[in-house]
Image (cartoon, rainbow, N blue to C red; front, side):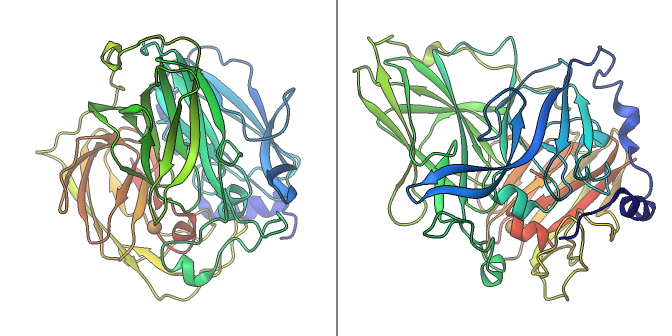
Length: 467
Ligand code: C2O
Ligand code: CU
């Protein structure tokens, strides 16, 4: 890809129109407090040891200045407290940061052409916002995403709340694969025939950039296991062996009613918070597994250490609900969203990367997003009004559909019983119809797309406009 200049951007942004439609919301989310010193996130290339084959080159990550360069740092924020980050780009291509699941002002959302200019090589961009919700979230670029995310740029965000229940320990797991050859180097990011199906899987699975890592936790203690699926393709079927695990939050939001983890599908973009009651005996192992496919795969292990704390899962206090507005279902306007395959011609080239194919569509429009080639919004929404997305999946594949900027409540599904989860990503099964309700309470243009990145970048992307 040629190095891009600011001059080109200016030309391109004239097409996209003015940025920062969402400025008016800043006051609402409390930018009034003095902004803290920004956390410097330097986008850079590095190398890391992911396999026995030795060092993998051309990894992309963010370096936390002063810290060692490796996996993107787990960013710690506090609910209701201002946070600031300065992205500095030392990659040889443009990038941005999107804060997945955080309901923040539109101009901070990190979507090139739609909410901000690209951040060019050598340039910086200051993000500043106040996370309104506590929970487990994550961050990633929204430019040339199959390459940038595929090569490492996916990090976890923990938003703490002083009122969170107390655990004996916390383990954060960033789950992702890598497409590496036998020599440990990157191979082609995707195969078109797979992009037209479930997506192209990685060849090496990792948790926190390690294969099957093991963490120590107090015997008989309660561990908060925060899991983020940041992979570009893989859907997990989570199961816990050797310990009792209770689902306490999904996609950052406390579940309406806690339940034991039996088997739960978690797709790209989604998060799962578990309360794990460690075994009593020193040295005992609890294993989190993915049992999608034939043989169970170990994701990570927790090992009991010390004398048992003899804690009880029932001791755990409830978590406060996040302040997500409750939609008024009776007055809500319905928006039909049909997820389908398409055979349109290839999309035009874009500086944030095109895969050169068009396989998918939303309401028959295939659009890759992150491009100067605009499309009309799926729908124009009135600030403060309630809406129901009526999602219909007419494909034989599962799609994790993600809405930026606002969280929705799952109302009903045509194929299964659903909990009224509050979330930003819903895993739509083949032939499923689902109703997702939300209040359009955040101004601006907000993407709605599949989080299997090959699907997103080959057409399964759209957006809503809140005015
Ligand atoms: Cu994780 Cu467009 O988002
Ligand atoms: Cu998809």
